Length: 138
Ligand SMILES: CC[C@H](C(=O)O)C(=O)SCCNC(=O)CCNC(=O)[C@H](O)C(C)(C)COP(=O)(O)OP(=O)(O)OC[C@H]1O[C@@H](n2cnc3c(N)ncnc32)[C@H](O)[C@@H]1OP(=O)(O)O
Ligand SMILES: [Co+2]
Image (cartoon, rainbow, N blue to C red):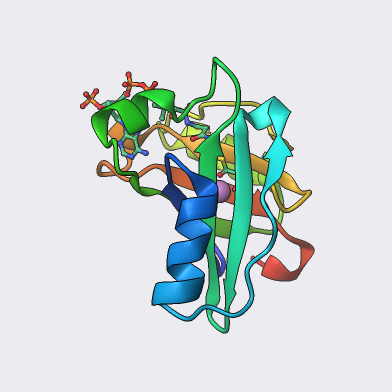
């Protein structure tokens, strides 16, 4: 069912500081401007790489889903991995059939496509995001 690894999500306390690190220390040359995504409670920026993306996410608003993560990890940290799927509704039904706790109804993510999240307690301690892409072909 899962297709390509689309991105690795990295939660950060300060997205502009994180962008400066990837640009000035690691030499990344293709980084997008931070963009708020209020319905998802984050601001995000992409570090675009030949093999995929690092998705930098900073809390947006009082009820951001990453606030507690950053309380536990004040300097930030690896937050989630995102796999592509061909049909998010089929994927959601399959995950539920297989006993996974799906954390949300499909909703628009940072790539402008539908995403769901699986509870990390069911997936070996890794927060998994599934993202619908027509090209996933799976
Ligand atoms: C959608 C826009 C963008 C995109 O790509 O399009 C993004 O990816 S934005 C990403 C931010 N949004 C989300 O993460 C939405 C889904 N996440 C959630 O609903 C919560 O973060 C949740 C439920 C996974 C955890 O919430 P919270 O930390 O507030 O709850 P707890 O403290 O009770 O944690 C429960 C349990 O999970 C462990 N945990 C929490 N976060 C992570 C994580 N990132 N990776 C692994 N494990 C995580 C936490 O330690 C607790 O474990 P326990 O053993 O029960 O103590
Ligand atoms: Co993501």
